[in-house]
Image 1: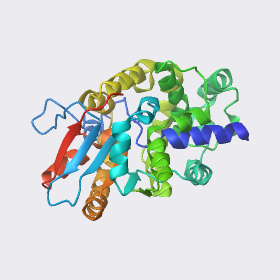
Image 2: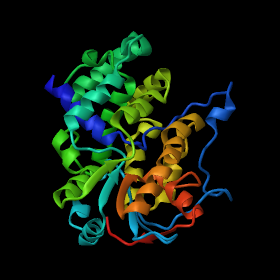
Image 3: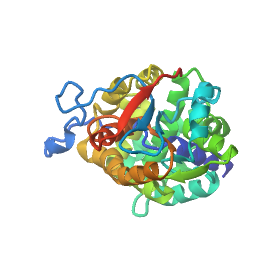
Length: 327
């Protein structure tokens, strides 16, 4: 039971708008669902300056607010030491994340509610042969069999496996340490630092809403395919993909990060995971920044493209300019 809790805590922390949510196979019967959703060579795309940190000002705001694009598996070590970022947080009244990450156990249990499959099992989805392959992989790499996860949505295991690959890409050991994942999570760090200096902490979504979106927006059959890709180290679930994602984030090149992340994503997945959520966030963001200076920290992919927060803010008349920091 302890190992399951560790996996779920790690899963909850890393799974916010994860860049691993991509799809590979073409659906010949429904080509509209397989179109690439971000083409940076298109006249309708938005090419951003290389930065993950942005200042929001103008449009009669009482004071500047700040927007930080996070990469949920990139370690917060260098950010923790950055006095410039700390000063900007001190200037704000509230630190806003995708979620309020104050009670990991409660959030993990809420996530688990949406992880359970009611009408099928992992064994039924995979078939006996592939189920055994996953079981062997889990025993070898996770120290436990797959049977205890038989009622859980495949995406839980996909994200657990790929989180290891992401840590490998950063030079970490190929082991899951829930406390390391949590303490080095950028989103978690910002909220904990804000809380330590007496700032209000707020979230743009509830954990229940986000868990449902992230776990239910991709069909179970596709999740099962992604699980097999993960254990086979193929495509969007490969070590090399995660290595490139981390490199682009360290370079603060959101354009290339987005291009790689969106290259195989289906339009309905993009709409559910990013566009609809961005559209729901925008009224909240605008209300907050008009009332008080705020520091927002959300997944970097929410910043890019014509559906991104930066473009939408600029379209509303706000000045959104990049700030120079080192990762």
